[in-house]
Length: 305
Ligand code: NDP
Image (spheres, rainbow, N blue to C red):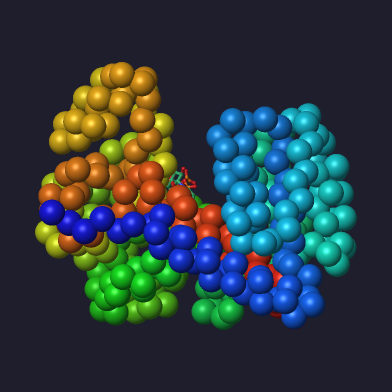
């Protein structure tokens, strides 16, 4: 059986590091970092994510400000709010929770955030700095995954990494970070031919597609390391029976509770063939929030010292 890469435990270490750094700042008479979170509307999943982020701020000593405008907020008012936070010297980081309601232009809003306060690392300036391998605020999910892989001593140099998914949030930045660590990187996506064969070449397989249980055990090279970024809620019993054949606990949860969370990889099948696998939940999710705390501290230190 593979080793379970415990993202939750690793995230706790990262959070403790940020907590210590914030405590050292305040003990030296400096103000704590401050993160402003904008949640437009009432999307239930976004509310859960924002709650987790605000809770992590409280845990680390980072000050958080929440803005919860209604779902009808016009684009101009969203951008005016971002402008106001950009100007505010007491605010170090700004996060616009995605997805935004359909009438809003998410890219325009994200591009409005000052690159120095762009704690999600989505601004083109920060993405460009990443492309050049220069210091920047980097997207939280991939940078926290890299941190965890390094902590577990996963060798990347010269190894074949397959990045499944090419989003701006996860796939593309993760591929760049793997390349920076001298992996040989393949980026696969919805138009890739013979996906199972491409994945089967991977010494490191990172899945970020948002398709429950897409990656089967037979797609995984024996001994590979598997990082599962996907977070999917499965309710359909027919789908559950197909993807959880080797995972009776998850199947039972769907049958009895009506839903279960799972990744893009069939965890139980992966455990039988890989050398290490991240679980869902308890893998990459907590790492992302820890990465956000690190970025907020970094944004604060680079702006106010
Ligand atoms: P996007 O929807 O932006 O991107 C999905 C990517 O997967 C696209 O590149 C798409 O290809 C590819 N894809 C979709 N279906 C297939 C398929 N059948 N075969 C091959 N490739 C496919 O998603 P995100 O990157 O934002 O998120 C991916 C997953 O990760 C989601 O489940 C999300 O919830 C989760 N997530 C988890 C986080 C965490 O903290 N753990 C943080 C961020 C995301 P194409 O480009 O061709 O359309």
